[in-house]
Image (cartoon, rainbow, N blue to C red):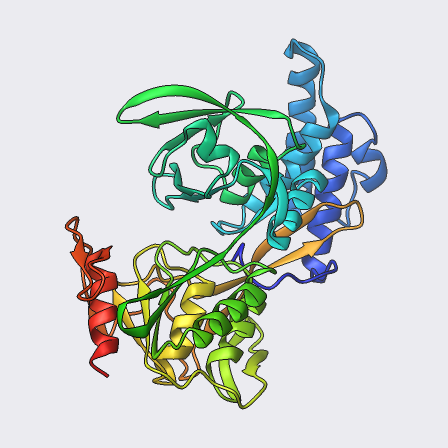
Length: 403
């Protein structure tokens, strides 16, 4: 989970350390900073793979020295080597982050950063990056960017196929600076200039619906989210809610700790999720107090409800504390760890599978709603106020008022 628990420190095993050292030396040799064969030698003591890599690097050096036209950006070349090693894992959620990229990611998870103010997603099959929706009154919204716009490029750099956190890093920058989004809308490509500004991410919004039914929408699980969620719960309680809808549609996840902390508001003491790594080591996450919501609860989900959203929903479903309404969730039942390195860079990779309290791992399958409702384009009205809502919200409302 870009989305998951962040681990501090470099915790790779011995074989990975050896590979990392080798890759570092390879990168330095390419840049001219070190002579690989002089350090590692050409005799015995090295694996066949190491010798093969060193020989290949020597060949590449010859071609670069002989034919490459431009100056070599040594830092860019070294970063490319590191990224290549991580990409070679075949883990679609793994990534190497430069110090600058990692700093941007940390700012994003804090919920306060300078950027365009939009929720974006990337299709895992096509790599297409899409604006899920601009934040209200954000620089993005003011510039005319709309939900559903495809981001083709950022400042002229194509982003299709890039890891979502890398795209997020590109659109962030200094307050008052400009970023040009090349977007595709209705098969037409156009450039939109957005003036970056400070974004205090409002990940939770809430309101009362007819019949004293509360509604909370959660857009992501960031560090600021649990406190915003608790405030929304208290506010709706004061307004006399008798049941609650939590909308996690299009919520791609975030921090595992945030989901666990929010579950502590909803469930009594006990296990809410656990993870297990390749060595079978199990880590349990629990609700710590006896308080629980205790009222009728419905959670709206769809195919973009993933990761931490599924942790939250899986615990609620297993504990029979509420029902899921909507369509099958995404199915991301694995945990990523981010390991910070001494130079400020970091690596992210899949480290464990997670399981619901009843032992379900939903990776590649998702969670099946208790009440399946496909989204319709036709709006429906609530009976008292005539407020127009979509049919999935109406289905959740109808369920709650019947309890």
